[in-house]
Image (cartoon, rainbow, N blue to C red):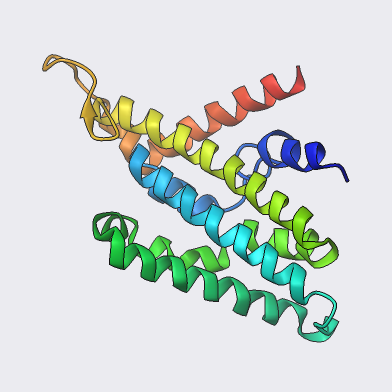
Length: 195
């Protein structure tokens, strides 16, 4: 597989949120603001890329019988590192994301890429795959978070966009708004992607 195909897969053809619809628990829960969405996306990029690298390095010495448990231990290690990093250096974001950082361990995207790509490809290609899938995830969740914040609070990254007369639609920062906007974005993305 060519590098350009791997990048296109992560950003467009196999976008984790808009095409595969995986990792929806954290996507819908965390994306109530653009900053939370961006922080979660960056965390996923780090875990996904580092996990892909590590799994690619140990793939030839890992017996098939214990492959999945090894993958989970590798992923959990990097999630713990990201969790501790956020707790130490970004306590506000750490508090805001809460339990959803440790839940990256069970995100289908991370384990799926480990199983389908990193376990059968070299380090460089696995790194590119992790980065492109992570960036695709980050772009999608940040768009969703930004729209939810704009419509639901009248702000973007915490900065007011409209005057005092703006009446935000609070439904968009709640769960129903997340589902509505995600459905609209998935439809738009798929329509544009077909062209």
